[in-house]
Amino acid sequence: MIDPYDFEDDDFDFEDKELFKIKPISQMTEGEKLQRFKRFFDSSSRAMLQNCLFRIVNSEDGTGTLEILCPNEVVRQRLSKKKRKITNNINTCWSHIRWFSLCVQQDNELHCQKFSRNGDLVTS
Image (cartoon, rainbow, N blue to C red; front, side, top):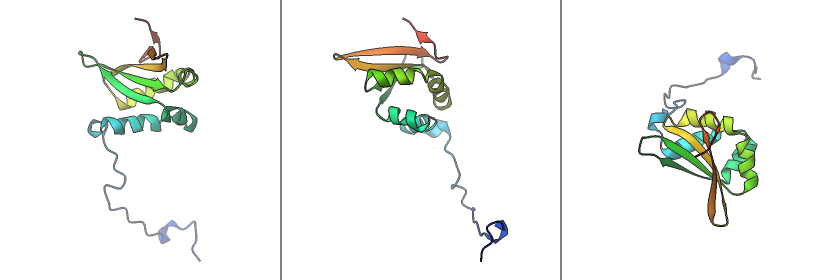
């Protein structure tokens, strides 16, 4: 019988250096960064984000905006309540993104709310 509290009986061979290696953000593709961004949310938020489309709009000055196209107004409103979490997650994935927008398409027009890194609504 194996004693579950005796860890010396277990033969764990973790010589493989690649097993727990985490890829640095600087070496990640944009798709990998986006997956990392989504992974930091709880399951209900990830479910909402699953139905969204994402793109990064880069400015000439090197900064960028993460645009999140929501499938409907309800999702956009729910995500706007999580703007602090969104900005925190953006900061862990992209250094050049200064803003994010929550967008919804209505009547063939794109309506966006743009937020700063602090989660404040930007009016321009």
